[in-house]
Length: 116
Image 1: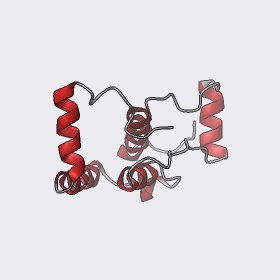
Image 2: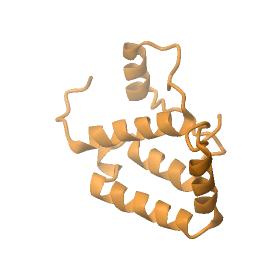
Image 3: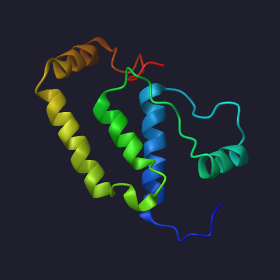
Image 4: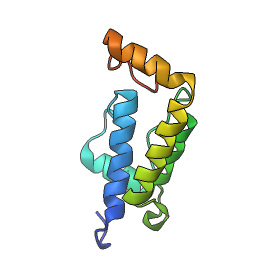
């Protein structure tokens, strides 16, 4: 919608939106049409609310990726590194065991990671 050159940072923003949708299992900006969304994102800095139940590391990553200033967004190389760190931290705690138990029970995909 703006006449700025397209860069990887636009895809980083999109990644954050897909991450939010995946974690919450909801559609962002429900009830708005694409033009309304585009204008609200650009002019009002609209972003979806991150549920308080969301892991802080996930919330921080999404917020960095949809930062208003594209140059302040991380690169995909950095995103992969951050996700690896999040996964390693989770694997070192009880969260990984719970996830494995849920996988075996077929429950891993039955509920959003970040409940609304």
